[in-house]
Length: 168
Image (cartoon, rainbow, N blue to C red; front, side):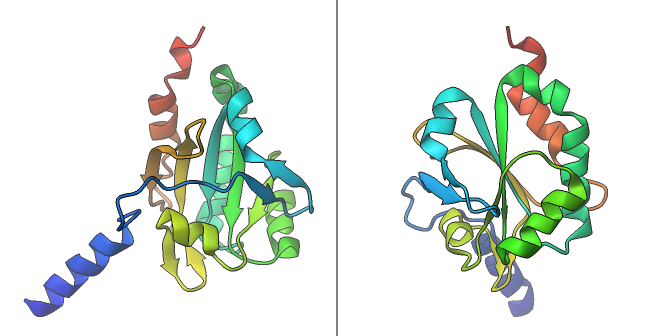
């Protein structure tokens, strides 16, 4: 019984985004794996910003997720979206994921996991919980889908949430 309770409490803490019940903000500026400064606030003014987090640069399911979304970009573009990919690790290995997947959007290294921690997405001290996040204009989270595996990627759920087919 105590083991089950501990597992449930741990699971609950893992999936709680913010214990202070304050709005969680994505950083207003980030640096890409290529060293480019990205003004996320300006991006949200021009389009819907979607953050895709990957567990680690070596995560094959995460790379498959990026390839899947990359193949659907024409469909997602109906919604005027732009993507950022948040990953633990060094810029060089994260940039290699960008090259391997061909995903044409910026990759953001979170080498100290400070962004993932603020978002409540630490899986363990070296990994980020794979998620899809839609940001509001004020950089708060509008929508989030947590978790991913080799049969459930969440991109269909994102597409349904965005309702791209009904955009003018």
